[in-house]
Image 1 (tube, helix red, strand yellow):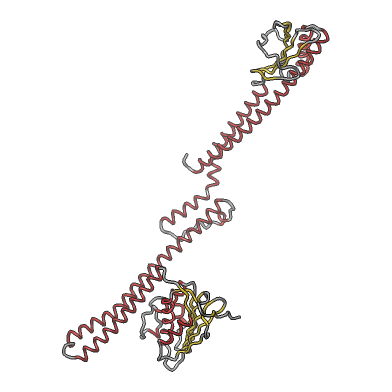
Image 2 (cartoon, rainbow, N blue to C red; image 1 turned 135 degrees about the horizontal axis):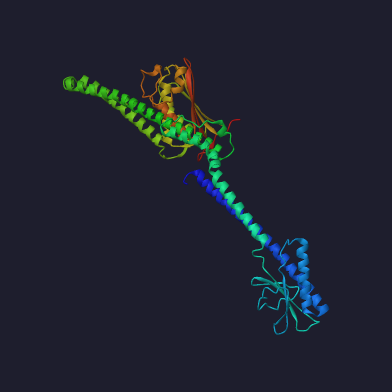
Length: 474
């Protein structure tokens, strides 16, 4: 009884039984009310006839006898379609019975006399009316009939309804579970796929067109289940990729840290062997160790920045002028041929962390200066287009190979042309993740042998205090 098909059978069977019983009760009460109306009409007709005969003849026996003879003729004529059980009793002022339609049944005692024809009242199990005679003073007629509680028609109707409800319930119990099981049969396919997923086969799908094409709850369950399975597969795949990225990240970070550490340990050995006897060796060793230590400090700082970006930690956010920021960054490279193109006396404001944005510009300039010969030019431009602040860094360097373009923003990635150069391969990754954290994007275009252009697009913010915002270009 705990299966879904049995629960559905009991729920809907119970509802159907309740509806059938309600309809049967309404029908029974309606027929009963109709019979009551007919019985009241019979009582009025009988009272009218008896009172007319009593007024015409003045004889109670004549009035009652005529009613009895008329009832016998009616019963004989219509084949006793309904029972003629309306009774008439005529009493005197003392309550003695002067005449009655039935000699076999004693008239009921104490019937009230306040129900005067044509009014008919219900008193106990009787419908009653009375009439008085003007021709024979003191004579009172009582006309009554029993309520049709167990009338043959009602009894027959009750039996028919009871049998119908019982048969309906039997059919529901007999065929309901089979019909419910047939309707729920497609869910077995969903259950089978759920078992496959539980065993780790994340590629399993219901994938039954006849189920997904259904426009009912079963079709919705099948479609939703496949969508859930696809989401689970994507989540697990993303988790695997995340673990693989973390593994590569740890391996690359360990490799990058191991190189300067090995150098420092080697120079320590040199100092241990010759540092006290040769000042020149000691000076070169200390300088090299200081340089390697700086590389390690820079790498650790980059790793901390990436960790903060991964954790989405909140940082200070304020209005920053990209023009001022780019001008400061260009001033840090006096030995390079860098040109700044920016609007004069106008700001290009964005909302973000000043230090993070300064690091983005510095990383792009550092990358351009590293791969551009001293005699070549680097152009830094700041502008705004379509409610976006635009920062471009274009160089005339060696460019980026086509196969390397999809990977240059990955952590620790360095193209073959820059393997021997300085840097950990984190600068562009930091730049991209910083820009994306500010709801912007970074793009790159490059032609091998001609140079590269990095473009940063950030949402343009309100004007800075004391400065006019650069108007949009058409």
